[in-house]
Image (cartoon, one colour):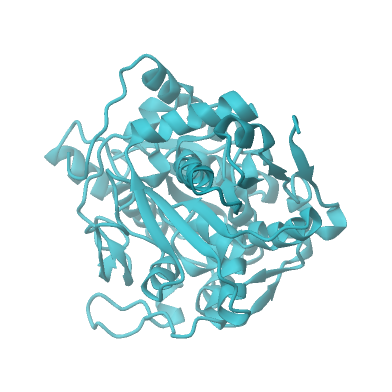
Length: 439
């Protein structure tokens, strides 16, 4: 067998509903708390930041939530995304494992992020919002929201983490091509950004800082709302189109996964692939191993604490029960900018707590070694973030070879790396170094 085997779906097979894991958890997720009163946050408290229609999705425990037709029409630009069997990678590793990947890099923005950006732009548009503010790490989310805002006639302001702003200039240009305003964070545009710069003029920035800036911008503007690309329940909800499609496509392949893998930063692409499978694990008692992969330099799940913490550095968000390294944590300047976040989605954190998910961490040189192996066999250059998942996939496939056991491995290739080539240059030239937490 010498070529890829691809399992496409037709446009008529686009999911009609998103899946909400909150309906099936055996224990409820602890609610967000008001930082002052320490009482559960009520929907009205979130209205200065989000439109009411998205707030109701955030707190919903309804199992299936219908995808509006205008959202499905935009999804049809690139969805369903292909499921591909990585036959050449299997052969390169000499493994009996069957390796499949759900490829989200075919979206206009090159990642899974439009799945929620399109939905959030639509719901804000019908709620009367004129402008969305947001943060972005590597730029995948910022470019996706810029794309979605352009389609629905909204203005878009993006605060891009400084280290990624410098490392990935073409993602900035992608956002600007779609009409967004882009600022390096910390910026001089907000009071909090100016405060951070006064304390450290050379701050590399972090997602926590950029979130604070975007929130401040939104709450001080009459017609603006804030949009988040990961972590929150409604974001994870919108991403479940990935896993719902993958379940159908695995059935077309005549196989069922034994191991399901995704990278984690805030948790959205991992949630998108795995939550529909976690439902089968809970409801149908499927014996899946589900593995979340993070960088050793920002190990919120493998080394963080499960406790209430702020989602941003300026302490503007509600307190969330999540795995966290602390909201003041400054991640090292690794190339996987999308994984440089101090906390983990409450729903993903809860799945780990309940034993439904396990987590591992890898240093970036090992991650890029795996990424190059994948690129040289499958042809696709992966973004640094999903390259973490690829490293875990290769480790699992090698175990299968050593044990002489066939397993079916499924992972989410959540974005291409064509705008991350400076990171590959660093690795291929031998300049890339490993950095541990806090260094």
